Image (cartoon, rainbow, N blue to C red; front, side):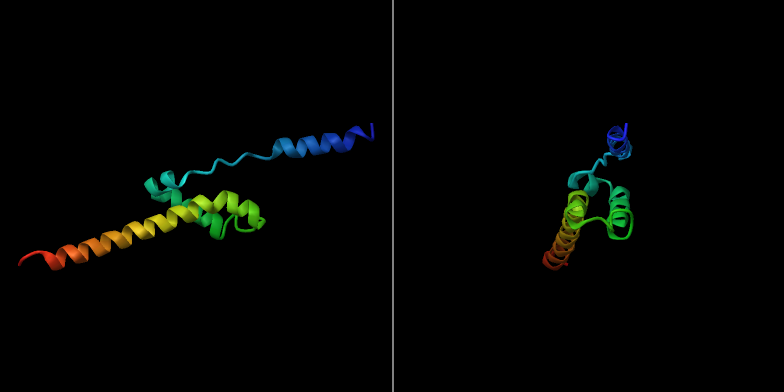
Amino acid sequence: MRKFLPLLALGLICACQQQVTVPTASELIANRPLLTEWRAKCDTGEYSRLAPARKSELCSTTQEATISIAEIEAGKKASDFFDANTKRR
């Protein structure tokens, strides 16, 4: 009985852990509220205190999406500037 109690406790702990579904970078780019939610989780929320390897697993797509959105917005801004300066008035 003493041998089974630690195994039972370990099995119970493992069964209670939830599997996290991490959204892809494309999903986060398409859904800005979801990106905001995940950024909060990764920066100051429940995932901010995880070990670096685990945090990287959960938050890498959030970082990719954030960088992609910044690049897209910078490209639009540069395109608007170029377009405004090249049109005849």
